[in-house]
Length: 81
Image (cartoon, rainbow, N blue to C red; front, side, top):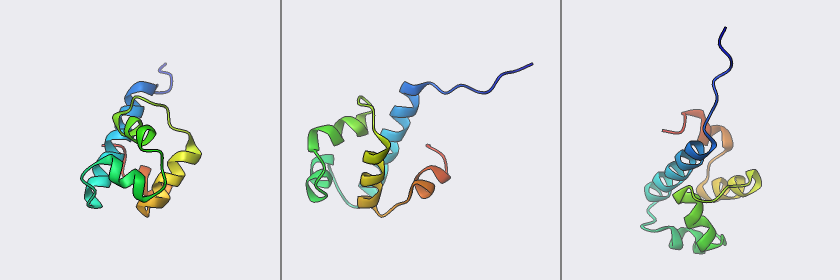
């Protein structure tokens, strides 16, 4: 009998960061500092989120996604790849 699939938290954090970075670039922002500055997000923290080196609170993720014009459903709907 197999148990439920377990996610590696560090890997998920890295995937979320990579997806944020990809979307930011699609929005035309060449670097994370410009995006963070334009949307009132701490630049240092945002860079850590994209790098996957800092845990991201759900409320902060919602704030970032709002700035990107996305919902949680849109962000996670097609997976984290």
